Each structure stands twice: as C-alpha cells, then as structure tokens.
Amino acid sequence: MAVLFLAPTESPSRWAAELRKHLPELDLRVWPDIGDPHDIEEALAWHPPAGVLGTLPNLGLVAALGAGVDHLFADPAFPLEVPVVRLVDPYMTAAMSEYVQLQVLRLHRHDIDYLAQQREEVWRERPQPNAAERRVGVLGLGNLGSDAAVRLRVTGFDVAGWSRRPRKLPGIQCHHGADGLAALLARSEILVCLLPLTPETAGILDRRLFAALPRGASLVNCGRGGHLVEADLVPALDGGQLSAAVLDVFQDEPLPPGHPFWRHPRIVVTPHAAAATHAPTAAAILAENLKRRRAGRPLLNRVDPTLYY
Ligand code: GLV
Image (cartoon, rainbow, N blue to C red; front, side):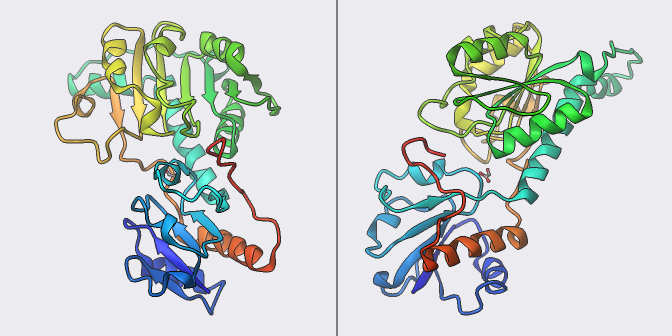
C-alpha cells in the first residue's frame, strides 16, 4: 500500500518527514516516480497535473494539501467516485482570520489613504468611526468564513454573513439564499469573500454585485481568483462604486507582470499568502485520515463532489 505525493509546488522531503512522525512505515511515492500504479491507494494532492489521478486503479482516497479542492475538480479526468477530503486545520483557520482582521482593519482605518498621504507629505485626518459602526459582510460561512466572522465580531465590528445553507453564529446576522445575498450586500461597507470556488460561485464578484453594495464599499478577496471578474474591478474603483480592494488571489498566479492590479492606487495585492498550509499541523490531520481509511472508519472533512466543498 503506497501513498502518492502529487503536489508539484511542494517539497516532498519536508512533507515525508512530517508525515512519518505519525505514520513511520509510510511508503510515499513522489510523482512522476510512482512505481507500480496498482500500489497507490491514497494520494496527497495540490494542483495535481491533469489526468494522473484517473489512471490509478486502486485509488481509495484523495486528500488535498490545502483548504480548497477546486484544483482537483478542475481536472476533467478526476475520478469522481474516489472519496476526497479537504484540509481543515485550526492553524490555517487562525492564519486566515488574522489576514482578514488585518485587511478589514486596514480598510476601516483608512490605511491605504494614510500611506498615500505619507508619500505626498500630506497631514490630513480622516473620519474615524468606531468598529461598532462599521458593517462588515462575510461571503461564505464555512470553517474559514465563520471563524473570520466571529473574530471580526469580537473586535467589535457589526458583522453579517452569507452562506448557501442557513447557518447560526453567535452575534452574527446570518443570511442565506438569493434574497439573503441581496440583504447582505446592501449593508456591507466592507465585503470579505471566503467562499469555496464552485460552478455557482465562479465570477460572483462582478459589476452587478459591486452595484448592490453601498457606494464606496471595499472588498477583500481571499477566496479564489475565479470569484472575481477581474475586468469589472478597475471600472468599479475608478467610478467610485468601490473605494478599495485587497486581493490575495487571482485568475493567473503569480499575478502577471504589467497586470493593472499591481499599480492601481486603490488595490492592495498580496501573493496568495493569506493562510499557507502548515506542514507540521497539517501532517497530523492528513495522517489521521489515512489511518481512518485503512481502518474503515469515517473520514474527516469529506468533500461532496456535487457541491465542490
Ligand atoms: C489555499 O489557497 C488553500 O486552499 O488552502
């Protein structure tokens, strides 16, 4: 029984060392040196090359090395009958919530304006509402979105959230469904996107959505680049419907040289760095799922392939 490591951007030796702390006998095969494909029963994958997973006759589990699984289902030959688990790691959840707090506070406290003013040697104080008077909306109330929403609430923001299915979170106005989305947008001065990327959510951050926000609202996208219709963002910023955008994810990553987002004065770019996978904590969670599969016990964080999360 062997595990295939199919994550071309990750260091296999680092992962092997962390995984062997929990599974000392682990037979880890690093793609493309997989040996006999019949040996492979489990795969650890991150942006796997298309077509590979569909060629493994005894594959019984695909575990993603990150929170999102859109990269798996992007492969047209992905074996949909094989169980998929995504990584839900409290370490990463905390990292994402730190990022969301940082960026929401930056927007709330006019940090982009003050940095621009400093470059121009301008001394001008901006309005300073209290967090309780700032309405923040969070799109997506899964593990990441709900933790970020609750922590924003603890900081004092007036927080609402939206998810496909009804949710209940302490101190958060939870909306769902199409009507719920309109209600959330109408009140959100700062909108944070932490949705999974699915056929339903692709392109959700578009001109129409921006028009449904209060004028001058701002956006934090730390979901996926595919959520944003990139061509709609600069016109919304230049026309004043949006006042700023903080983006961690992009259609093409790395963001190509010369892309208009790099130098736009109302856009902050971070390099898909909001919440990186942390191998020491992630390895324990991945190993637990491998052990569960081998023992025939229920898997943790199993993905519903019809929902994409
Ligand atoms: C990162 O983008 C992840 O999905 O973990």
